[in-house]
Amino acid sequence: MNPRPSIVLIIGATGSIGRYAIAEALRQGYAVRALVRDQARAARVLPDGVDLVVGDLTRPKTLGPAVDGVEAIVFTHGSTTSERDVRDNDYAGVANVLKALDGRQVRIALMTAIGTTRPGVAYAQWKLRSERLVRASGNPYTIVRPGWFDYNQPDQRMIVMLQGDKRQAGSPADGVIARDEIARVLIDSLQSDTADHKTLELVADHGTEQDDLTAAFASLTPDSGASLDGAEDDVDLPVDHEPETFRRDLAAIAGADR
Ligand SMILES: NC(=O)c1ccc[n+]([C@@H]2O[C@H](COP(=O)([O-])OP(=O)(O)OC[C@H]3O[C@@H](n4cnc5c(N)ncnc54)[C@H](OP(=O)(O)O)[C@@H]3O)[C@@H](O)[C@H]2O)c1
Image (cartoon, rainbow, N blue to C red):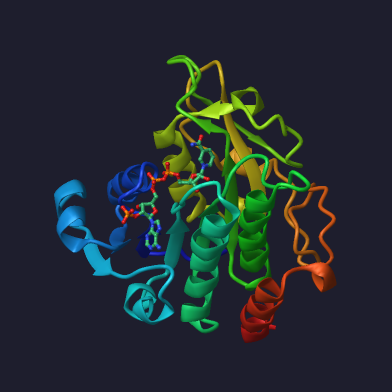
């Protein structure tokens, strides 16, 4: 059984999910650190009691102080849907933080998006590559792919975890979820052994929110340590044909542990 982490770093802390993740982590009694780009703005928008560390995901040298001593990291950052932005920010941010850990083990919760495995969608493939790095890193992790934020009806609060990323319309028809519930699932995963090595799509159904998510996490198939992809994903991206950036990052990150 993994010990419960006590110091958690929230990445994307000032964002629309990150702020809920901060609130939920504080509520659950974690010591909370936030990676922020603008300290003054962060001090205005984040609650008291959060340790603010200034850094930028695109500048690796700024990330050492952010990861120093943390036992868990929750990634909620994001940019646009341009391939270049997602590659240089969303993907590179995950790669740079994993490299800053230098092989040290921490519990990870990574938020990407439903539909990440859609073939031929260039920006989504960089999200998928960030997932692949986390799986290869040797850290305990949970990868959460939320449906569309805030399209849920008020009575649509029952948390549903899917696998295989089969909903690929690219619209709210794929599923909807409230932002606070995404944050709750990310933070709950940190202390759940049943959430470890799981990849899930997260949507909500009509009904009330569950008090305890242990059974929902337990019902999921774990990812195979032998594959870079989620347990039930249908992905055809052979590593030899992947971009050089990814192959270099994969070698650096998987090599630190394996
Ligand atoms: N909208 C949906 O329905 C939906 C569904 C599923 C998944 N998603 C995904 O959710 C992600 C986050 O969306 P959101 O609406 O929560 O975004 P958001 O409110 O714009 O928050 C993004 C956060 O990331 C931080 N960030 C961005 N680049 C950074 C960098 N280089 N260094 C440090 N921090 C950085 C931002 O910091 P600053 O405050 O300094 O800018 C901000 O805290 C997106 O990538 C999107 O793909 C969205």
